[in-house]
Structure formats: C-alpha cells, structure tokens
Image 1 (cartoon, helix red, strand yellow):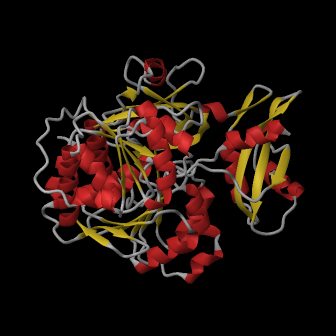
Image 2 (cartoon, helix red, strand yellow):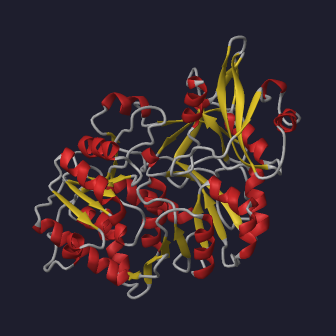
Image 3 (tube, rainbow, N blue to C red):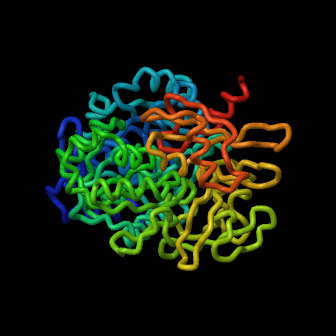
Length: 501
C-alpha cells in the first residue's frame, strides 16, 4: 500500500483528536483536519500543474503544515525533497537543481533565501506557510485525482545524506521503504495512541520525518512541534503539554542528565526517551534515566535505511544502556571484518551491514555510489563499526572513516568521548585524529566544561580508564562542539581547524 492512503485510512477514525499542536502558539490540527487539508492541498497542487513524479522541495522548520504538504505531494505520486532551513541560498540551489525540484514550500523566516534560490534553480512556484500562496492551496475546492502508485518502484521522498563523507547525495526512498519501516518501528519503539510526543528534531531529517511525524500519524499519537531546539523552551513544552514520549539525540540526553535547568520543570509524565542519530554513552543514558525516572532507550539507523534498523525494546526490563538493541523485525544484520569482509562472531568488532525492506532504492543519478553502498546480495554497508553480544544486542563503536590509526592500532573517538562525558566537569566532548610524525595519528579532545578542570586532570582521568595506546595526547577547552542538526559531531570541522593552524 502507498504511504499516504495508509495514514489517511487510519485518520478517519480519530476525528477530533489532535494530530499536531504547534508548541509556541498552541494551534491544533486534528486528525480530521489533517486529512482534509492533505486532500485540499493535493487538489490545489494538481490544479497548478503538479503531476506524478514531480519533485517538491520543503525548506522549513517544524510546524503542523509540514505534514500537510508532505502528504499532499505523496498522495499525488510526487516526490518530496526535504531541505535544512539553515542552508544558504547557494546550498539550497544546489539541492534544488540536483533533485530536479520544480515547486518549493518555505516558511516566512526563510523567504528571502528561498526566492533567491528559486530564481537560480528555475522553480515554477514558491508557496509560503501562513501566507496567501499556501492558504490558497488550503482553500482549494474539489477532490485530488486518483493516482496509481507502485509502492516498490515509486519514490515518496528524497532526503539528502549528511555529506560528512563526501558531497550530499539524494537518497531515493519509496513508499514501500517508508511503510515497511513504520510497520517495523511500531512493533518495537513503544509509541502508542495514548502518547504525546515532542517534534523538536527537524522533519527535514529522516529521523524526525519518519520516527516522529509519520510514525505518530500511523499509531495515532499527538505531536507537539517546535521550530528549533532551545533547552528552556523544550522543558517548558514538555511540562505544558504533558509530553510522555520524546525522540531525542545524545546532546539533548546529555542536557537532561546534567543541566541544572531541568530541576525547574515537571517532567513526570515522560515515560520514554528514545535516542538516535549518534552513539549514546551508557553513563549519560543511566544518568538521564535516574534523574528523570523514565526509560532511556536507543536505536540505530541512517537516511539510507528509512531510517531504523535496530532498536532497544522499551518496557522489557532488559535494556543495555549503551546498546542499540537487536535488528527490527524483517531486518537482517551482520558484522564483517573491515578489511576482508568476512563475517565475524559475537563480541568481534567490524562493520555493521544490514538488509531489509527499508533499504533505499539507491542514490539519485549515482550508480557507482549506490553499488559501493549496497552489494550484489543486497547488504547495505553502513560504514559504522560495532559488534553484537551473545544475546544479539548490537553496539556502535564508531564510523569506519573516523577511526584513529595509532601505530596501526584503531582508536574509536566515540569511546574516548564517552569516558570524558563521565567526568563531572565535562558538559560536552569531541575527539579527532591529530597527525603525528611518529605514530601516524594520535587522539586530541575538544571539551566544553561545566565546572573547573585542567587539561592534565582530564587527560589523566581518561588514561586511567583506557588502554595505554588510547590515551589522549592533547586536549583543548572550547565553547562549543560543532554538530549537525541530527546531533552528529562534525569532526571534520575540528580536523580542518587543526590543519588550518
């Protein structure tokens, strides 16, 4: 079945239940209202010449109407390409051109950049949320056309990969990919129709798009949207709307574990924190769980897998704080040797490979990159190093390309970061390779402090907890660790800063 008809079918029975609430204003979009808006906007787009296979770009922060335009496009057999609203006009133009977008939807704060890029990319029409251009779509009369969709072949969304290992690539995801991942995720993530969840992670990113926006529509939960992350507003929103389930990334878990602001708010309704997009250390997970009195679970996935492939099972009482859990139903996973590709056994570190119905169709116009990612047997090579224990629970160690090679030995930056974050004076940390004439590479840490500590004290703290070859050789105190919107540490920026020196 195609994605949007599946969700519309379920929405009919939910009537006036809130589907989305705009956190800052309290404006509510019910399930009935969402379904009617999707149909009207689809009809309006069709009247303006939008046809099956056309690409529409969404360049906006989170708000309820994001789910309206996304599914109006989907209902018409079109393709959404979702774009980070922090992109410059040039970056936006590049994605519009690469994706072949002909229509663009944005929000008022981003209109100037959107219009500049639209001119450069030959966009036919720009719509702005909350302004007459978009309101006219909402006011459209008539029914949208019935469009035949082949779920296995037809694309529904084309987000772009992060670009941390090269130029961003369009990830072609079909209706089948997303529907499969919704069904898989609904079985294990523990989100139910009784939950109110918080939509603070960006909907342009696959995590927010599928695991928050679409999974909530699938199970019947209510999503409270936030346009951006601000800790105080985040805490206020959880308290005000009695949020019960929060999808987050490790920096948010870290703040919930350590920031004194948390004590000022009633977060007692929160029952599950689900963390993804980057490795979460056991110490941070346990600290957040103890402080908040809720379960902290972790999952794993990537844009190319729609996104979820692994998840810890909430409510089982058998959580392993640092583990990403076993594979989802109908998902195969294995660990292979990074060099030889040979399959490895329990507790042996290697590259994680996955296979299942959520694996992308491929990269847009990049057959070589697709072939490098997905082998002939359908195994997607994630580029992440990890291992599986004897119980089948998987653990992430680090990225293949981010491993530090010290005299031929491999050091995982994420492991050293987890140790640093266990120190009471450390608020955030990142570890990068530093070129060294003798050793090849040595690890250097960048640390954000929450209380006084010297570099020597922190380096000794780490040295006492890791093998001698893993110890930090340099440490620098900084004001902020650069991260992507999904929470991943942008180590390449720190490396580039070092090389510039």
